[in-house]
Length: 422
Image 1: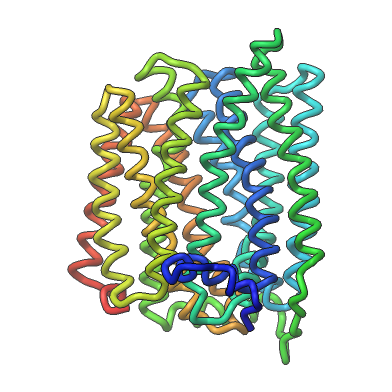
Image 2: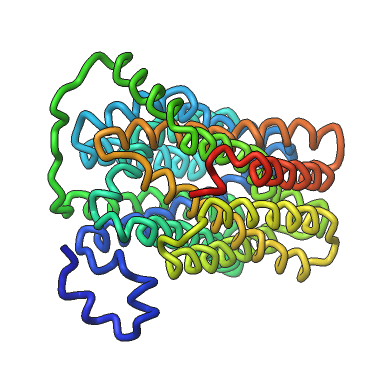
């Protein structure tokens, strides 16, 4: 039940936006996740810039993103079964320990000036391996922290913390870079500070996970790992709207996330600037995503969520085509703001629909299938787009992706497969 903290939210609109914060465990979890996400995005920004400085290659940028997501494609279905069988908090804690360790190793390598591109690629794979098991547990834990009526709001607020981190993390890296250079240090030392901060940030999320009061309810019965996975796949296959949402998520991430992966190249090759401009581009995208998530949080559960997500996806396709064509920095930053908002509306709405449709006893497996499609589309899209960018210009690749996103949205608007009606 909501606690007395709800009385602190004065206005009706503010209470509507922050409805999930009236639940104590959700507040605790949100704070820990936000702190860790800031560190993670600080590292992502620094790591992408490090890859560019080491290789000057779009292919290696795409390969790094691919290797971090590859374990999710390979193991997330197993992670979903474990999320339905075992205490989700314990699984999440193990995942956090591994990710904290990989960040610490990269910080040590940078400190001793020993880092090579293969180190980065290997550590990205290990990080992805931890996320393959932690992701389904985390997504399955959130619905147990709030009432079902407040689930879309909780999903949107989680998106907000993730995207607040997308703004703050890159800006913190940019501030660190400027501060270090002003005091006579170089870029690698600033990157090392970012990796060390990320490692320490995991201590906060570990503490908050231990502070949760939610209790694990063991399943009434379990079969073999293979049988439980098969049950989850069969459930999704026989629910046409779930299957269509998962296909839509895969197409969206395959085509829509390469623009973020390529931002270091746009900063360096299109605008002929350095890391500071790159962090600004990331921050504009993140700020837009926060606004998009706030819109979904305010709307909560609303009619025709599926229809709205398809229309906004088509708008997102138009926006990234415009970004690919822009050669004016301030215009590109503005376009990134609106692309961030549009992408987050699509992401939050589709995720909410999947969470609302899935029953608790199947949620880990359903979410793991959704994550496989959603997260799996990112590395495959980055890898394919990265390769194409070595053959044709990166802006042209982004423009082609935008056109295909419009085509995918148009297909589901015409054929529906159950999305328009939900």
